[in-house]
Length: 157
Image (cartoon, rainbow, N blue to C red; front, side, top):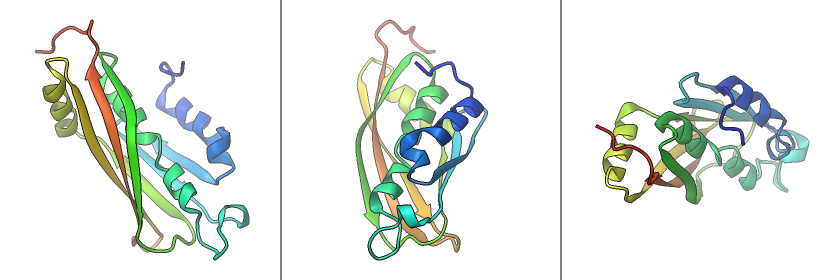
């Protein structure tokens, strides 16, 4: 549905997407090569919990789609990519503005291509730290991707 969007257009769309908009999540950048994204969550009265820190769900939501979205575009249309699992570990109260950065490198893409070359599914964990303004890790988020080369995709060589 949105496969033909540019990184800039997807960033704009995500910034008005109700789950992000109303949680206070802002996508600051998506790399032109689909290999990076920078996201932030600012503290507001409507997105803090009872004790005045970021809702845990908002911390998880700010990281939720990015590993899948970036991998879909970076690896190309010969692959199926889905989120399979996710987990979050809260390490410190989240106050103020928190940020998450996502980076895909050639080694990750090569690993995926090698693991799926025969048409097998591949489950890969990706990790992201959510950090506060001082650079302290507030939460560590792990997402597991399900990746498989499409049956009608030509063999890579």
